[in-house]
Length: 123
Image (cartoon, rainbow, N blue to C red; front, side, top):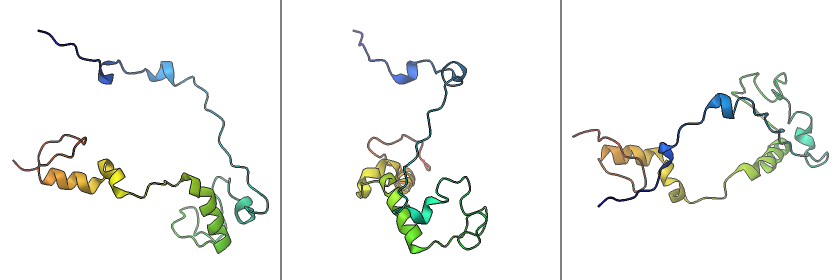
């Protein structure tokens, strides 16, 4: 007896970049409306391409390897970026994306339920 299986995504032909993506106009950039009073510490440079690059007081230059912001600047940046941070604090939620767990399970020739399948390191 034959068995009917459902089609999988990998049986679909790949989308052609030139036909589907090349001619699509990008959407408008999302910009927060900054409050002149609350966001005053970052208002002047928040949307600049390379903010504070020429100000040696706050950053070391175009590499941004070292920076030193004032407390009002830091609190304003944290408040603006807080909506981008996750509400999830449970480490187990991210176990499928935990590289240490992947490496450990591969080294032990174990499989993570729902995780990737891989060849064992040692046979």
